[in-house]
Amino acid sequence: TLENEPGKQQGCPMKSLDDVPGSFSNVESFFSTYDYAYNDTGMLKMHTHGRDAITLWGEDVMRDVIKLEARDKVRPQLLGTLKHIFGHKTLQMLEGEDHRRVRKALSGLFSGRILKTRYELIYAIIDDFLQGLYAETARKANTGDADEHDTYIELLPQARDFTWKIGLSAILGINDLITDEQSKEMQLQFHTCVAGLSDFDLNNLDNPETPLGKSAIARQQIMHTFEGIFEKAMALMAEHELSDKSAAIFHLLQLYETQELSHEELCDTMFTLLVASYETTAAGVNNLVCCLYKNPEHAAQLAIELESVPINEDGGYFDYDHLMSNAFLEGFTRESLRMTPIARGIRKCVVNDESVNGYEIP
Image 1 (cartoon, rainbow, N blue to C red):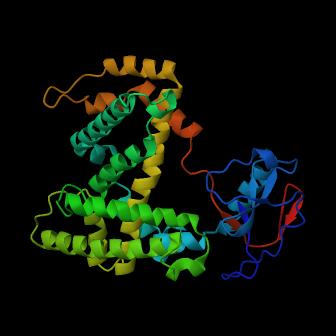
Image 2: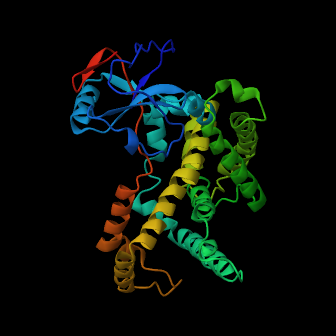
C-alpha cells in the first residue's frame, strides 16, 4: 500500500493521490474485500484507517513497486494506533532500524530443536483444544430445538485460548513465572488491547470510554504484570534456577542485563511477541481448521497419512521426527496458509515522487 499522509512528520513528501483514476472507497476494516472497486489501473484508491491510500493488485503495478523497494525508494509506514498499542521501541526495531538485537535473541525460538523440547507440552495443549471443540460442539448439538445453524460453534475464541497457551509456553517457558489466574486475566487484557486497533482516532487515547482508550489502560495493566514476571525471572536466573532457558524471556533478559536492550525495548518486545502469538497464531489455527472443514477429501487423505506415523510408546504421542517429515501434512499446512494468509499486506510510503504503472505517485 502506498499511503498519502499530508502534513505528517518524518518528512513524508506525499501530497495527493487525486491524479490516480477512480474515486476513494471508504474502507474501515482490516479484513474487508474490495472486489467492487477494482479498476483498469491495477490500483484501488481507498480511505482506510484514517488515511488515503492505494492498494495494489495489478501485475504491472506490483512489478513497479518491487523495483522501487529494490532501489530503497519506499519505506515502512505504520499506523499511529499500532505504535501506541505495540510500543514505539519494538516497532523501530521491526522496521529494520535496529532489528539485529531482537533477531539475535529470538531467531532460534522456533527451530526444530526448540520445538522438539516442547513437543509434549504442545501436544497436550492441542489435545485440550480439540477436546474443547468436541465438548462445545456436543453441547450445541444437544440444545434440543435449536435449528441447524445454531449447532455450529464459533471457532476463533477456542483458537485464541489454544494459541495463548502455546504463546506463553514459547515466551515464558515452563518456569512457573505466572499463575493460571494471572494468565487468564492478562489474556482478557490482551483482547482489549487488540480491540483498540479498530479505533484510529489518537485523540481517544485518554478517553476510557473508547476502544483505543480502553486499550491504553489494558496495556498499562499488562506492563505492571510484566514487571512482576521480570523480577521473578531475574531472581531465578541469579540463582541458576531458571529451568527453561530456551524460552524467549531468558534470551531477552540476557540482552537487558548486558544493556543491549533498554527496559522499554524489553517490555515492548515481550508485548509484541504475546500479541503475535495470541491473534496472529489464532487466526492461522482458525484458518487451518476451516480448511479441514471445507476440504473433506483432503482432510480424509490427511487422516490416512497420519495413520502411518509411528506412535511414541512413552506418552502415546505421534513420533516427532516422523510427524515433521510427513509430506502431506506439510503440503496441506502450507497450502492452507497460502490460501488464507494471516498478513494480507505491508504498508509502505514512497520517499520521492515516483511513477507506478504510468501514474505519478507524489
